[in-house]
Image (cartoon, rainbow, N blue to C red; front, side, top):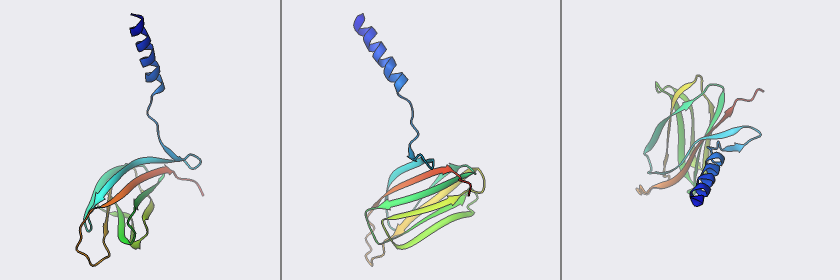
Length: 140
């Protein structure tokens, strides 16, 4: 009986101490992760998904890879496919970042991809780390 009581108390202590944690990148400027994932993309293919965004925040999409010299691009659209922001880099360094604001709270679409700049017809996957972060707009 005593063993069950100890297990119950320890379990309760873990339950009280465990909670979801918002990951802040730089607390002094309040950047927080919205989404982060690893992607395996093929050259000339498009990765696209919808995300919620709130007016009054700054957003940054970031693509990181170990492969240099690719042509990378990131484009943001509203739900009616009206362009909001884009960045295209030829012979890009290993990171591409797009900072943008949304005109209204709602659902937005990000589309991203890359092209291999060599004359090779090689369509092997390239690994990317894809991250979306946000923070409240800072008054200037």
